Image (cartoon, rainbow over all chains, first blue to last red; front, side, top):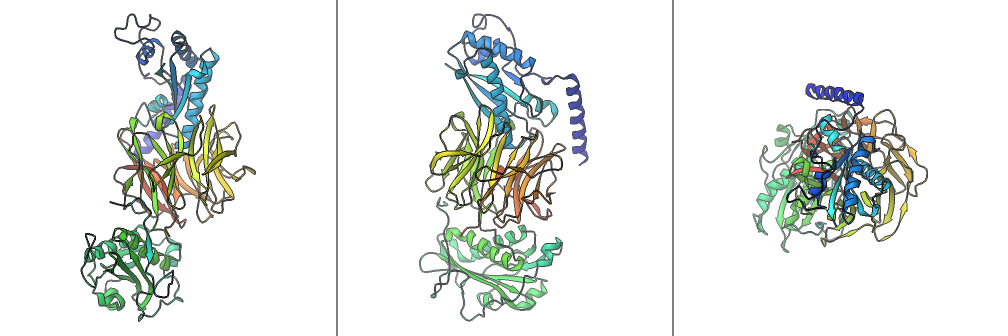
Length: 169
Length: 457
């Protein structure tokens, strides 16, 4: 009981901090983007052009993050999706899946619906900047596939996400 | 191996063809029907004074080997299952075959009441296991009041040897019903999701078992994520969501044939399925362009009927037992809350108030209550309220208790409990309506999304 209450307090403080910064991306960002803007394929030995590996290496991030229970695409998310759109423009035959995810603090079915909202928000933004929506399929995993496994604010922030995954031509 | 067909249990047929409680001994006087339930006060007060019931091993007139099972060993095992059922109800303190002496065949119909009174037993269960001429078993089940020296229950079951657990559950149900005045619930089954593997990549398999965890069987192999199963009212089918081929779709799995079919052909995600009480319709949720609404469709297919149309998430849902209303959740007000509507979607009304978020509503088979998951303060708890939203109260208190499902008699709720952290477990639990009798349901692996079916015929 004591332990749980302490944890809850820490979580609350963390949330305040996050809120104060008005920055929703987690402190620890997954896959560090390297060589953004470099020529695809030519200088990344062994990477197949148009592949998932190529995608990861050449976009600012494969994922965008959301606030608790939210699904709006903010300026930082737009920048990420713009880098993805640029890459997708180079490989017009490549199709992607947009995975929507939620953190573990929602019930299972609701989180599937929330993941759908997030994945569709990302898809709609990509479509609005010129990516053919027929190239994008959407799937929600709700809380079934967390990227960070802890039960704390930092882990939850990493799990409220929409991830773009290359599925080939 | 366990057959995939629903187990068959025939009441011991008498020459007169009676279909309900059958007399297994013509000499014994019938049960005193005027005797009221003796434990009514115990139920009402949640007293810690539980009725003591002795459950000695069932006798056998002749030790016989039937399909590899010995009638004397079965007599002990059946008594153990009866005692475990009664214990799990929270109302009784059974003295199982491990703590009381065995009985002779002669005692079955002529209990030595003084012996059981000396054990402080208010009641005693007697019975027998006997091979019949067709390779089956006859199980007799008697309940006596030790102080009054009266017979309260007398039932006989003719069963296939592999169904001996059902005879035990039926006997426990007869005892529970006679003493508590409630409808039976032990002889019923549960579909759920068996979970294994790391938190970030859980393997989730559809599985089924008896209400006490017995006769466990995995249905799917775990290659595709499986979630949110529901047994059909006749136990022949299970509706659930599979991530087969990386899509989110509702399937109906046929327990008898092992085949499955889509509930509806759609390019959109379909999830959160529920049966109508008559098993002819499925309620499900579908996300179109990111907006989730609730639909209803015949199990035979056809055109789905859209029931909600708000821009918010409308999801889940559960039919009232009379099939006339649906309770569901929606965040149209800004946060998850519980609503009711008619089955055509009309008259949508919010029924949950008072702070916090409410989710996963499930209508009791008795119709008098709706169970829910309440989220607040970083925790999930199981609670109940009336169909108009009154009398809300919480039954559990843990980090995350989610997804209630009702026992066939509407007295007990199963749910799953998750613990925090990367090694957090997910396990099946049950609690009765007093909130006092809380216990874990044993499963071979972790478990979630329980679905408790009706009493077996």
